[in-house]
Length: 141
Image (tube, rainbow, N blue to C red; front, side, top):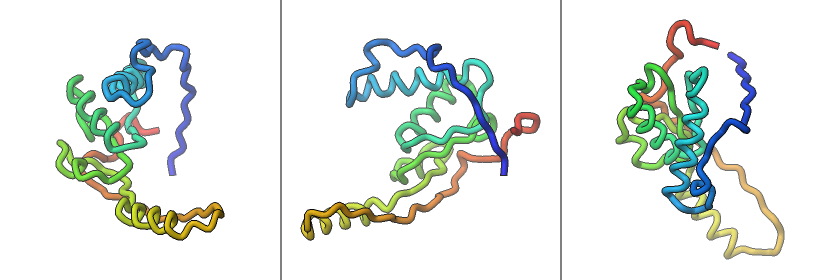
């Protein structure tokens, strides 16, 4: 197991005022790109774990536009398991959620509502594809 830590100085993160409004795809994309610019400005990471496949797919495009190789220079893992992840270039490694099961369970919980809070833990699946590899030699932690 490799441990890594980093301290990020968020005061240096520059995000235009127009990228801060919620639920606007163009502004969200601008925020993600600003974050990537910050992460890759000094000492680029060898891997990214995105909290959604959408963010990971945007990062794939962003890296390609800058001539960086996935997974040669940077590995990327998404989270969700959307169908587009399998057809991206390279195909995206992702943590797939059981979306259909989540939907069925949510409907059942609504129909069975007894007024009590209920939590369910569902399994996820790591779907290994071509967007991940060991870090380049000399860049290991």
